[in-house]
Image (cartoon, rainbow, N blue to C red; front, side, top):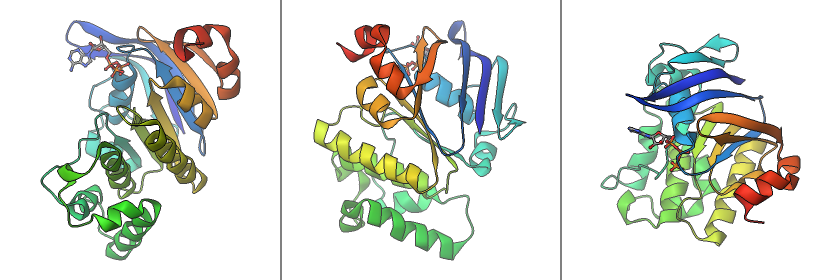
Length: 234
Ligand code: ATP
């Protein structure tokens, strides 16, 4: 579904991505793990068209995303849940969710999807009139994921959904990601929490200094001595 071949990208003179090569197949959960500053967020930004790839290729369902605006990429079915949630704190939960459906015109489908995300995260139904900024960190992450789902993604990009959350809340969020995937959405998950991410994913890649240096099934990566030492604290 998604293929990155030798992608390079950066910010001015800082080359954040030197050689990122990976694939995400339809129906999979694929995770990209790596240390702080390895280039995980930049990889997602390149896929979304926010940080342009300077070299290499990014293909979605066989077609290059080169030169497409972020909006055009969302229309193709790629939607990101950014690091730090980035919900609109003054808008209500419901308004945040409605903004996720900004590019859609199918009112009946939007209503159905609203019911669906509130069923996935019942707390959002309870808090629907409350400003997003008054939610807890975990609830804001639920809102950010739900807002992305309101755009009807075929490929959902998640940037560190576990960041700053308590272990119990992380387990809840990851269980919902598994369910979203089981319901048919392909997931590309970027995480520093390698242990949880590899337990959830089918396959994984390790990113070091802007290069994908290791690719394997999640199960084998969990068992890999280098990965254990560098990323799992074992
Ligand atoms: P983290 O887990 O801390 O988010 P990451 O693996 O997602 O790390 P990136 O955020 O992609 O890494 O950063 C990769 C490199 O690009 C780092 O050296 C970082 O300092 C740099 N960088 C990221 N964003 C910018 C920016 N807006 N301007 C300049 N440099 C940036």
